[in-house]
Length: 163
Image 1 (cartoon, one colour):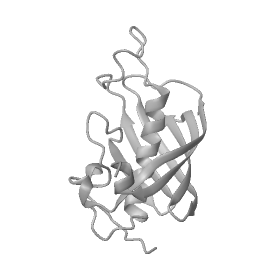
Image 2: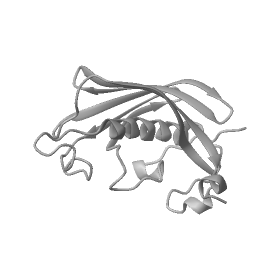
Image 3: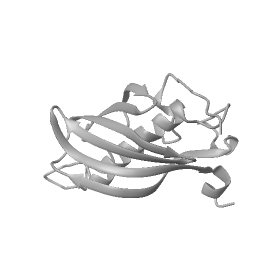
Image 4: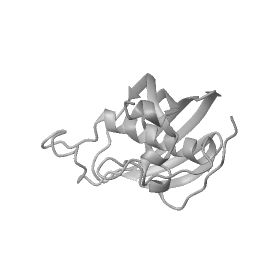
């Protein structure tokens, strides 16, 4: 399968996610094997208010989502099988890019709190057919607060849409 490289201006040009579920604030760099992104935890995110009252922290599941969205950007930028790609009309695309199919490991070492700027480094370990195997680390400053390994897959959009 031939892949078409895409380099867009905005994060929304790579992902179908939109607020309030869009986690990535900034794309720092992209290569075929690695992406660096960032997110600043504002404290206003929909998931912070109840997690936990009086001690707000970003849920681990949302850190996982931050890493998978970052990996999804890498797939859209470097391994997009479509010559035309439209994030405003998901029914336009033949493929849904970067669907989470497996979480192999998730290790949480500390917390992400309001005001923290998270740096996300995602590395592509292996790419076989439409399956992408990744490792990621989330850091605050020099401190790594989470590591994970997961797989994303490009699937037919009709499958995602339940057709």
